[in-house]
Length: 359
Ligand SMILES: Cc1ncc(COP(=O)(O)O)c(C=O)c1O
Image (cartoon, rainbow, N blue to C red; front, side, top):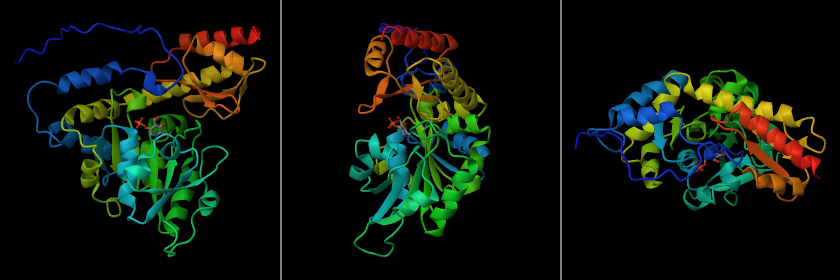
């Protein structure tokens, strides 16, 4: 079969004009990424990452993260985190992370169950660790009764829509390394951080001492796919074995790799992330002056967190999808994606205003 002309018995079952604010994962695939997948289709390529697209991807990642970088495409973000963290720890090791970290809250215990990893968590005001906060868990070195803190994991941009500065990450990496710990960045939204900081990706990873990262693609316009990126190959080894035993080795890897090429060979990663960030800023500006709505966290990436009367949120949820972040306080999270439009924001802000007016 050589003719791959599209034709399908499938039926469109959704309205592509409908967009919500629940998650950047609700968005579809960026057309340039879909085009890249089609480009990589047809013919046969060696499976399990020995294909031409994955080979070239190494150069693409090196152009962003430096000559030593090694890229290992995986299926999803939980998998990327579990693979990367396992590489940092011996069997008796533990990872220090913010209490709000995705690895702690939203991965169904996968780091513990699949990776056998002990998480040592610290409450933070804004989703960000600091050297002082790390010290709340960085103790007991050499004591066999305590899981040994061997790594620090931070998220950039954070689960709370906040951002580490370049200097904050440098300070964390220096502090971790002084204690003999390695540094992992959950970069599910690393592109949003690059866009917001106006800095190259390596400026707040490779250049400040990060050892390994989970680089996100799905939230930034890919069909699926994340990448474990090793920045310090002297210290972070054997990812290829851990990826397979962690069930993250894609046989048709060319289709994951070519998506990352589409994202990173040019500036698509920045266009998408910058747009999503700009939409979050637009939303914040639009709701800031609505009486009874309080934006409760700094808007530094593509998320807006707000508190408003619960009954208003519940009425709004009948019109737009979004989640309660904290059922107890009534805090809600509104996420923007690469395909959120200005008209979406304006209509949503008008709906918030209208529902507030009915209260
Ligand atoms: C901070 C963070 N890390 C990782 C992930 C990736 O998770 P998944 O396993 O759903 O791809 C997410 C997704 O929501 C996330 O927000």
